[in-house]
Length: 94
Image (tube, rainbow, N blue to C red; front, side):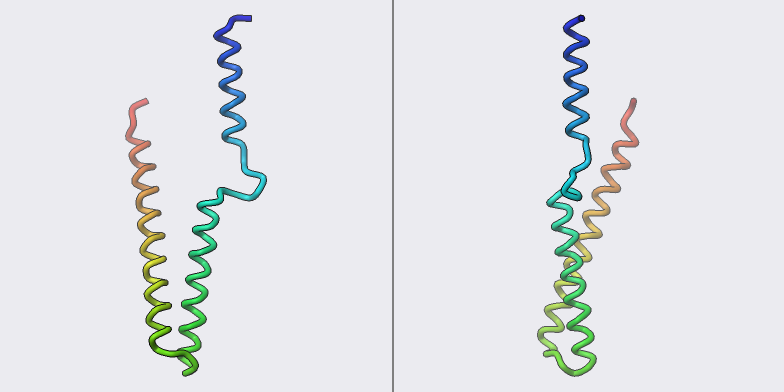
């Protein structure tokens, strides 16, 4: 067997294991970001409903809505960067 073929096979095997799905259920960083994002949105919704019922302090409502706005702006910025990177990849010559 040619040594170049052997190196190519080893490289292919390493690439397959690197691209294999994570059995734990996804990447830790992105999963943690999504969980934190949903927690912030749920908190903002709960405080908003409590404020409408007259049970929440307006200061807490402003804090929750500000955190929600920041989380949504961060998610939109992240989405825009991903789309921009994807479009840049599409523009690459083959």
